[in-house]
Image (tube, rainbow, N blue to C red; front, side, top):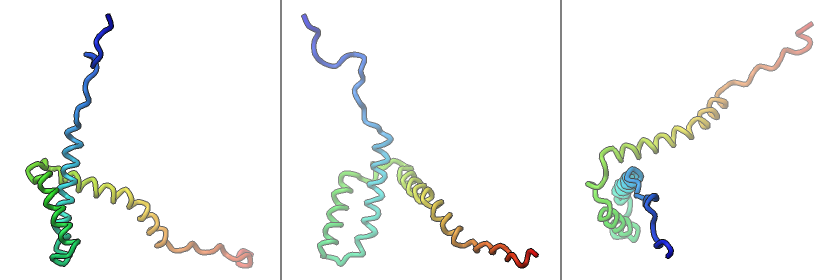
Length: 113
């Protein structure tokens, strides 16, 4: 008789990564905050204003503020700053190179005699 088909005892089922989920929730909460700031830039009643209002409502329903873990917003801000700093060295090098004066040309052959 063949062994039954199905999961074996030694293999664990995949489990959700709570840390990644918390980070994702924090990012969505940041997006909600940005949308709340941006909504006042649109004319009330305009299609854009209505879309932003509806989007905030939908996101707030699925990602309430209580769901965000303490520090999740700080982690998102830290990640954003790190990305900016990682791209900053190249820009800083270019600025420094542009700010340096050109080296003086070597003295003329006549001046060496």
